[in-house]
Image (cartoon, rainbow, N blue to C red; front, side, top):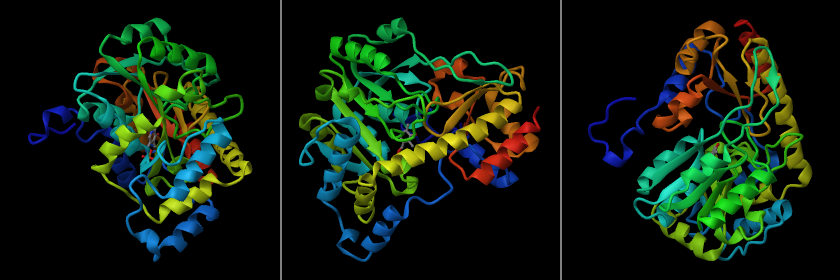
Length: 400
Ligand SMILES: *Cc1c(COP(=O)(O)O)cnc(C)c1O
């Protein structure tokens, strides 16, 4: 972390992180970059062709503030088809500059200074900064990995302690920020776990903001359930998703939020003064993507599952205990068998030299007070072409 004398106090601690360092290391050493999670293949032509055709038309100009009507209709249809949830495209659906803006605008639009946000850690890196920008306070609850030993692919699930969750909910708690399927752990919250969360949210009258950008990247044996589908939850929940992960278009930044009109309206007020709108030609393209047949969505998950298995086999052969993720495109290892001091950052710094691969230390996804919990963990991405993953797995075996 560099010192930042001009940085506002609410953003102290959010300077350049080890993320940027690891990507630079990949470039400098020519190592395979399994650090940052972005795909190295184009998305479906049915989506790309629509964006190409839209450039040079009226789609180049500002779309309506809430998003193009046809995209809002496609988002509502998609929610109905996959979740059985009905949203009115007129005032219960808002198109945003990626899921990131939807989350940030929701926090800015809903939190009063000092309001507490209950969430699980490790956590996606934008959450802590967005809560800080909104003047909120984090109340993190740890997720704990299942036991895993050297040379083995563990299939257990990350879990949380219900008592720790309940203890994190104080009278200042205002919002539960959930991410399922979960980055970086690959955990999918079960219906039973969501029922506990729903009960806690209801008892403390919390709003729920759920980040479901990996909703379609779920593997055999797991099922994505939106907490908004649980009894009574739709009315207190904002569901956030995005086209980036589902259609291999992370650079397009086309996201959305669905929820009851009164909550969506608060998000829209903040969003209006952040970007107002973005990505005109990409909006009809993502609408086309959301209307692709079920076979497309199943195919994406099946292909990624194969890639998961390629990478986790290489990690296990390298002597790194690894948990096979239930979803997303990330796998987490425990570095201690290869690095007895358990220093995940040092492990990542030396990995390009030792094995020609770059990964990200999971400690960056924890609040400073809980950093110890993630110190020995490292995240690898597997959203890469088969030949890249096969080569990375081969290189990692050198660690053994
Ligand atoms: C990638 C990611 C996002 C960001 O989505 P965008 O649509 O690119 O803004 C949000 N949440 C999680 C958990 C992610 O992994």
